[in-house]
Length: 87
Image 1 (cartoon, rainbow, N blue to C red):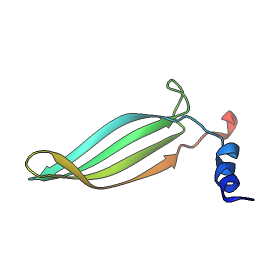
Image 2 (tube, rainbow, N blue to C red):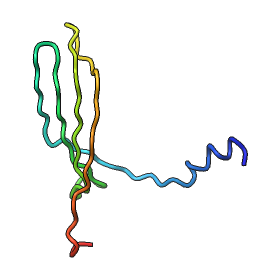
Image 3 (cartoon, rainbow, N blue to C red):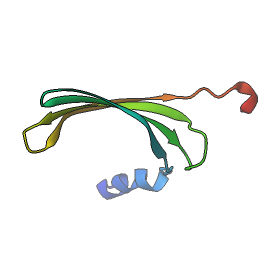
Image 4 (cartoon, one colour):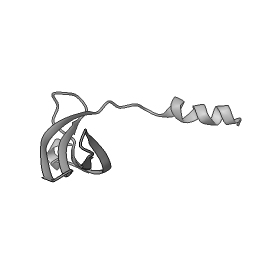
């Protein structure tokens, strides 16, 4: 298998799934020129479907006097439980 064939193989076999994320709420804590934002969201496979997972992003921001800069971010996602009678 050539280098070009190996590079193209994952793209040809991988399945793409659209995911729609909508904001639930944002919580901001600010002290002077630093801020912490917790941004929660729900993930869906279509805009009007029930969410299959929820997650939260944690974003740390720094203001240099002109604008806000992101200094760090991380996140986590948790699948929602589906009752056994719905599977």
